Image 1 (cartoon, helix red, strand yellow):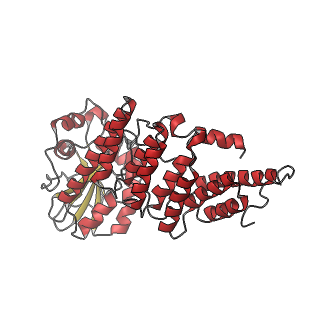
Image 2: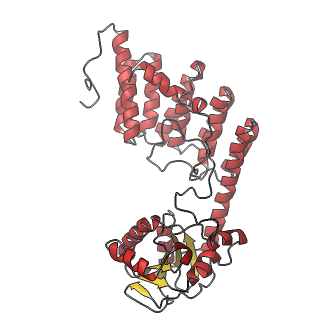
Amino acid sequence: MTTEHRTNRRGTGPRATGLITAVVAVTLAGAAAPGQTVSPEPSPPRAVSPDADGEPTLASDTPLAAAEDAGPSLRLGDPMPPLDLTTWVQGPEFDSLREGQVWVVLCWATWTPVSRDAARGLSQLQTQWHTSARVVGVAWADESRGETLDGVRAYVESRDSFMRFPIAFDASGGVAGEWLEAAGAAHVPWVFVIDQQGTLAWHGGPNDPDLASVVDQVRAGEWDHEAYLADKAIEAEAQARTNEAIAAFHAGEPERCLELLQGVFDMDPGRFAQHALWKFQVMAVEMGQAERAMEYARDLADGPLADKPDLLANMAWIVILDPRPEGFDERFVEDMAERALASASQQHGHAWAAMAMVERRRGDFEASLEAWRRALLFVASDELEEFYLGLEGETRAQQRDSMGYGPPAPEGYGIPGN
């Protein structure tokens, strides 16, 4: 990687690309899990779109879409309406979703390709759950979509290798109104989890990361749908404030943006720690208020982020990647990197990489190369490994230049560990 390439890399930082990009959903989980490292340039907050999970939405002229506007009448904790199980495409057959059993009902259709992946995923989960939770698929007659029993049967028979659970066909189409519309389902396919008492425990998309955990808790009798709803309400509030912060930023109101990001962080510093990082990024890079940003960062490092090495290291990298020549503050970068290493028992690749950049800037190439060796030892991803190797190569080239040596050695020469 040449020096010019590195300059361009810095130029693609937050200021060059714009801090906030709308369209895709933001992850509200906060920092990465322990032992993981986030990317060199932390992801900015982004507005969430209603159907950002990529699954086909229901057409606006279908009854299901209309039901969303009316609000759901079938809620968590409600008894589930009976299901028409008189017609079966694939067994074993049964006449009802009996109590005492956990049921995972996949409402699917041949006209959406996502149903195929949903069926495959639930087939795999069924092998884990055995008989403690039973999966059943339900398709239904839909004249507007050309959905018929013969069509569903042909679809299942051609794909029976991954649909390893019973498939029923609702000839009346009642499941569309009494289950999907009533629950306010956003799209097809949609999954309903029914507890041992026959009540609705949960519903959502088949790719929802909560699904497997929910079923495990229902099986164990530990599921609390009220706590789940309260948690989702907090998440929705956080997302609304994040979107408002994005709007404020685009409207040229950075202080309002900072206030809103801080508000989300204050809701739950452990869960929404990423918002503090975004606030630091806005102050340090977008607003150019480095001193204010670093004071804020040190307060975070002394308090709520003291045990979050990923975020500490990322604050260092925000400063390293600041495209302004005056943006690199060695003492701050070193401070954040050292704190991250102390929190991670000296085993944090991104923090070692930040230390390598500090030593390189100081002209201590031996110390920089030793830090790169450690960064590569604890690197968290292939992408970061490539990033580190490029910068490590630049460090070697600068060391040779400083010693008056000739052209670079062959590729791969002298890489730590070789």
